[in-house]
Structures are given as structure tokens and as C-alpha cells.
Image (cartoon, rainbow, N blue to C red; front, top):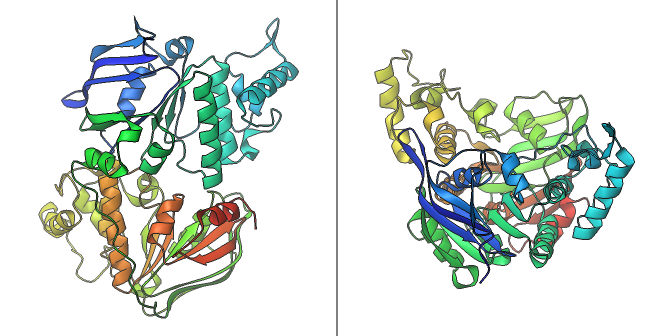
Length: 491
């Protein structure tokens, strides 16, 4: 029997009184793909940060190839054959692919960097592992999928025999996911071990050999992936059976509540990000916008929300949509949705101070009385009106924003990446609330990089590419491959 490539033995990690990892043990066999799943706050990221030398464990030990090791910093982990690809890539946009891959181990003589040699080495590595990239290309010009290949090459160039991938498919198209999984299978065949942190349980079943499920800082189950159903993994994650989405309402939508015509919106550089786009969203309808990020979705939502002035075209709200002010669940909850140092009660009042019935005196007791029912109805935990928003988990911060926005009375709802970075329980909750808005006759515009989410929630789907609508289809029976091709600019 070969020793495990990695063994975590009784790892604990405390932050003051908070126990992030509680006696966690995990083994990663050589040449295997091991999925690590769990809700936000389950302890997955903390455990991988311990493994990669970013933080020290409070207790327990780490073994590599059967030998105890101490990892005080990432350089120790890299020297022992560990590599980590973070969810938010750690690349320098202004450098070339070769310069990024060789950063920290630049080839050359007498202290002078040799770019031609670096490009040759990266080209050879790219060919060896089937990770096609142009060594001379600047990272800023690459697609998200290509940037991910660069990150993997960077880890392999440092001799990684164990790869930790944190939510690697979060912003990839179906075709790019297929390509990534092909690469992972090839790496597995070459003896590389992979730890895959993901929320997407269908992908766990598609690629993983083993699964470990964490909840509340502990391991609560796992085993061979072939022996665990998606439903069972979900139940272990949340501690109860998952709730399926309800069926679409079998009725025709009403009149348009949002009409966008010939819209042109510029990005922060002054370039046209939305280019002559025309779109309607009707009462009792969810229109999902799919697309690789950076194709104008962000600028479109900000223009409709009144946060960005269009360069041309019109945006019209019909039917008294709260005076033309839509409900807006923004893509960045910390920069656009919340003031983290403020209390939950204060955050629930943001943007609503002048509404009829809003409290004129911002006394804590008055704000708390107004906030308490919302916190209870939207299951924000802890439901303490006086607690700082910064103290909440990501999922509860998102539910706080949803509570504020969906109780405005607006008939148009803009939901941009509403479940990004939140756990399965919060995803179910937010999905149900958006469906309830649709069933109540609201017009919902949903923007998401999660194609499965767009298909599951939408009545109609449009794909944005290059600032324009490249494809449109009813969601019922939508072809995921056709959507993926359109997201990449294909016909």
C-alpha cells in the first residue's frame, strides 16, 4: 500500500472562541481527484489554507508521502510539491503568460531574465500537459478559461504533484468546464493528486474519485464518489434533504414592465460595453442573462439601476415600477450592497429612508423594531438587528440584501449573481424568493455566471456577447451546449 500523497490528521484551527476546524482528518491518495464540499463557513477554505502553509493549525499534524511535515508558509508547501489555484486568480495582468508562469524562478544567466528561454519552457510544459496557451500573450488579453490554464501551469512549473483548486468552474462556460476536466483527468493519469473545492455537486459526480463533506468545521461524511448520490451529498452538507425548485408557473407573462431600447453604455475606460442592446422583461417573467463575465452584463445592470449613465438609448419602466427605481441585488455585496460596519437594522434602511412609513428618527429601538420581522422572515442568522453586517457569513449578508430589496414594493427586480459565493441552503432560499417575485407578477432580470442557475430559474434566456444579445431561447428545453457556444461567440 502506498502512503497517502497528503494526510491531514486531527487538524484543529481556532480563531479566538471560533472553532473553524474541529479535529478534521482527510487522506488524499496519489493520482486521485478528491472533492471537498460543504456550505460557507464549513471550514473547507481554512483547512486548505492550513495545508498550503498560509495559516498554522492549532492542533494536529500534516503528512506528505507518509512523513510528518511543518508548513510555515506557502514556499514550504511549494517546495514539497503542493500548488494552489485560488478562486480569484493570482496573476499579473500586465505580464505575459511566460513571465507569470516563471515568476519567482526566472530562467537566465548572471541575474538577467531570458524571455526566450522562459517562452520555450512554458511552451514545452503547455504541450506536455495539454494546456494550450500562447507564452507571449499578455494575461490581460486572455479569457477566464485561458487564465485558469496559466494558473495551473504556474503550479506545475514549480513541480506540484498535488493541486488544490478552489471553485475552479465558477466563471467557466460548459465547454471550458469540459476542457478543464479533460486536463484534470490527464493530470490524474500522470500521477498528480487533486483537491477540488466546489459547490457544484453534479461536477463532483462527474470528476471526483472521493468526496469529503464538511459541516460546522467537522467532517460529517464522505467516501467514494460513485457510492454517493447528489441528493445524499446535499443532505450531508446542509443537515437535511435538499428542497427541489418548484415547477414554472403554467401561464403567459403580462405586459412589459422594463423596456430597454438601443442602449449604449460605456465602461470605466470610456469604451462601449453595451452596444445597441434592446430587451424587454414582462410581468410574471424571469429573463436570465447568460454570458462570460466582461461582455457588458455589469454595465447593463448598473445602467438600469441608475448607477451608470447611458451614452445612448432608452430605459423605460412601465406600470408604476416604484417610480422607476427597481429592486437591485448587486453583484458585489460588500462594495454595492452593504455598509459592513453598520448594523443589520441600518443596512435594511439603506436607500429607503424617504419611503412612506420609513422611521424619521434613527433611534436604535425604532430601527430594531422595523428590522426584526424582516430578519426573521428572510432567515438572517443571527437575527440581531444591532449586530454589524461584517459579522455575518457571506450567505447571510446576501439574504440581508435580498430582504431589503425584495420588500421595496418595486415591480422590477434586478438580480446580479444573487447566489455567488453562498452555500446550498442560502441558494435554495434565494431561488425561492426570486420565484415568488415572479409568481407575484414582478419582472425579474437575472444575471448569473452559473448557467445551471439561469436555466433552472428563467422563463426566457438571452446570451450577451460583446455587449450585444447573441442568442435568445425559451428556458424550457434550452440546449446547454448551444448556450455555451453563444457565450463564446459561436453561432
